[in-house]
Length: 295
Image (cartoon, rainbow, N blue to C red; front, side, top):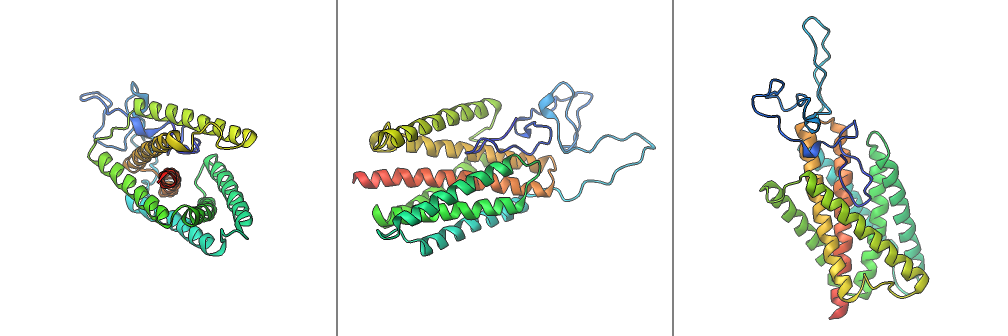
């Protein structure tokens, strides 16, 4: 089973299209159960298979060298810091070099939309790659940063200078809150949780696409999902979905480390976490913009 993400196409760490995040523990006393967390699971439990376990070898057979270079939490933190740092740097440069005054607004918006499209294409390319490509992930972060920088600058200029900082702080609070809830096991990522989040996310995205189409061809705000009371409601729903994505990302990282995923997979973890945090920030920025406009 795959992990989730705002583009829905990012795979989990498993190499056999399985998702390691919802494994059931081997039954106590089972003949094939092992105390080694990196051993293969029981045959009767297909979700207990470790995709990174080394094949069993018989006595006298040549043995492969032990796996080295397994992913650690430090690897994930380092790669995530690189991708998020690239997003912040791109946003800062875009804020400084792409003004959103009346004379340059159209040009800056055009560059921002182009950067967003490039970032989306790069994210799709990485999602379909069998292995993480650091250059693709960093490039995605750079173009995403340009988009966020222009949008944030426009919000700060035309809605309120404090909205952007509030959105940043709100995103940090959501991240910290979900991490605490996950570590305390107040949030339990199960197959049912995964299915609920995916169904809600697909429905949410479909509604946003329909609203966009109505706004393009009908003018105005389409069906009104991004303004007024409905806009506030859908902004809150979007943030909640982002928090759920974070829980899925944390589960994916936890299982990747427990199952000895290769160190290069930490780039996938950083990629997913960055995409999720961008999602939360945009929803937070949109919600705060609506609330500020209603004041």
